[in-house]
Length: 301
Image (tube, rainbow, N blue to C red):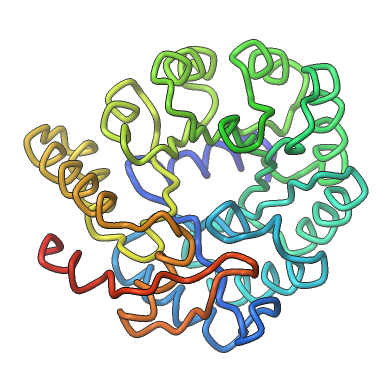
């Protein structure tokens, strides 16, 4: 299958749907993958109507796990999904050696796409980012690559100019996942994609606006624990039902207001309260001290 065919297939399968940023099930020590819970979480999400699965991203705490555990997570997830939905594996890292090692290993698992966040904390320019993404693409020359744009956390982002450049230079470039809050920049990224590349919105607060501007679908962290309103939103947009889309997005913002500041711990606690024991957040992150799901559940039909 050609790279273009792979990218076209990925776009078709993720269109008008939500791809949860999967929480990573951990053992009680908070550092090692809980292999037994991975399939429970995946079956729960597939049963709720998700379109794809993003593994090891921000909500998945990928950057907080060591290399061996990230590799184990990728293997367990691909096995548990068993080709039922597209799997997007995050291979970004703060150093090139780790990013390449993750990419080379992930390519052997034959995921539907790789995703790479830029190196974080230290600011780097577009020339360095170009080399970073070129190196990752070269390490998996047959796997579609999505760029992960979240500059409010990573410091380094994917500017429209950088996306336009890489669109010309990377034959495996499939698109961008953008979590930035600036709707005007999201619009510019969508304009650069021009229907050729996949644009997945990641900012939940403005999800409906991003979809209305032309984003193909969503990648959402909260949807790994509460997928229902995100599935409803994307389905309504695909159906052209604006009233239903607005209602779903209002629900999303209501439950976001109920999510504590300890976001990753909160998401994991919701899953535990829904019967999926994904464990704690990676230390030193703490878990919330109060129940969450009982307050959210009344908003979920």
